[in-house]
Image (cartoon, rainbow, N blue to C red; front, side):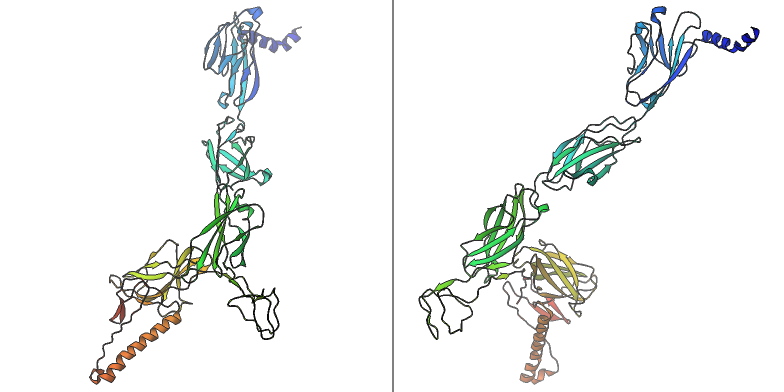
Length: 567
């Protein structure tokens, strides 16, 4: 008996201290951020009646609760640290379990429940360890705010971040029919965003869009999928395979195909056909005439009627959607057939033709001595396709100061297509245009330019105009000598030829005139042989003005201020 008593002595001491200090139990609970957690604590209210109870953070001290968060007098809550701490059970029935609303990671730690039972060392003590873990953000709910031709703006409401701050948003965008594997993915590292605009989209196209949110734990589930169709826009491409065909002396057939499907930007509704007569004598176009044709098929056709015989016409075609009109498709000029004349009888060397014989004026004559029947058409007629590039601009010198040359120019006839730009070539006067030229480009609306940082030298300068159909011939050539820095020099030799051969011919004329100026005085006046003062006067009769120059110190000085034109 004594042996057994010694063996169970430690257990007896434990029971004694349990009664002395009050029994304590402990367990662990794991919860995720944002959820509601209940920490269980109960006592036998039927045996003990209604008893005071409290909850605190940390180990339970000898009396009361450390870092108390909530307390009850056995009937109602008498105090609590915040609204997040609640007694949701029947307090009077002995349920003093603690409920914490929307737990955070900071709520992790040990909690203690103490029920004050009358008597010494009778209090019921209960410990729980709460572990709160962060999770991925909740999925976003995305909605469309604005849709335009090439942009889509979406917005969303901030969601629960999972207990860790959202760091990044990801947007997936794809064609509606394609899989998400082909989506274009964009990440935005701005957690404060609540809307964004997607740009560089294609008009009249349907897209699918979804979004994700990221925090340090991971990526959210995908948002709802938005399906949006961008608005229509004017076509980006011109009609294709445009062809002109002369039918009669008064009509031309025009055929074409729609623009590329990826450049239509919507449903094609119609085509705008613009045509105008080209006056070859005046070298200019007449007024535009317009007509609209409904878009109905892949190969479109229209016949232009009431045209003039033997006349060139330019035609432009533009495709239309409900949003606007696209760029023009062009073709070379097309000439109507020559006018047809009829005669009752035509004689040949061997026989006569019937009264219905026809021919076209100014065609190749028929030398065959065989008779011609009533269905014969004399001479072969072919459709004429010509492309008219722009005329060269008229180049003028505005000012030469130190090493700076200021130029201005007057545009010429634009040809069969609007002028798209100019480019200027300049070289040393002794160099060749083929090997020593420098090119400078200018926009179509520019008519003045200044060239700087040119070393003191004598230059040749000329200019060209460009359009979609080609490049003009060279303009008149200016020969300009720049002076030393600080000296004002206005030196210019203008050569109205459009190439180097023409420039050479002008120089030969100049030398011939100079020689004549010496020989004639020698023949007429012998006394003037020793000293010759050379004066060179040359007049250039031009459509818009004249150019006057005189020789001083070995350089030709520019005097006139009027515009120059090609001879």
